[in-house]
Structure formats: structure tokens, C-alpha cells
Length: 129
Image (cartoon, rainbow, N blue to C red; front, side, top):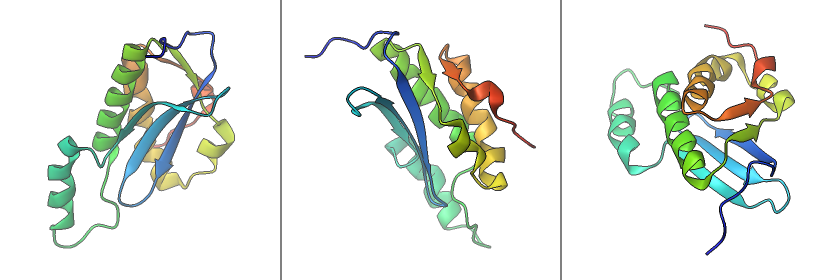
């Protein structure tokens, strides 16, 4: 069993986005190992996914800001369980995302902050909407 990560270790929060899913993972910079992960493909989100899949007219994006916020809550709780209180983000990568994704990611970052996790670099992001 490994010891919980300390707050001095730098951790990086990465988001993987597609039209069908959103996935958040926190990696340790020194070993590139995944410390915590949360995704919209987890069991509790299947009901929402199927509802959007069977809707007519069909939507091109199967997740929204509400799902992103719940993913933020889950990753925040998992980070607190492992003892991590500060993560960093790649600001250039986040600013290069299309605007329709950036609008939906504002609630994600707010929900991570609500759980008590400090996000280094989030103050540089501008969310519209």
C-alpha cells in the first residue's frame, strides 16, 4: 500500500473532452501516474447519457455543465480522500479549447474549488456564459 500524496508534490489536473464524454484525471508530475480520475462514463451517469442518446432531435454533445459540475464534485472528493489539496492546470491548453466547451467547464472548476481543492492557474481562465 502506498502512502498518501503530500501537498508539496505537484499534481496536474487534465481534462479529456469529446462530444460523448468528459473525463478528469489528476497525475503526479514526478511519476506521471494517475492519482485520481472521474468520468462521465461511470455508472451514475449512464441514465443521463441514455436519455440524451434517445432524445429527438438528437444532440451532438452528450454532456453539459451540470454533468461537468458533478464530475468536478467527484474528482474533488477523491482528491481530498488521497490527501491532495492543490492541483495545477495547463492554462494554455484550457484557453485553446473551443468556446462551447469552455462555457461548460466553468461549473466544473467551481465545483472542484467548492470541495476545498485549490487550482493553480484557474484565476487566469475566463469563462463566458
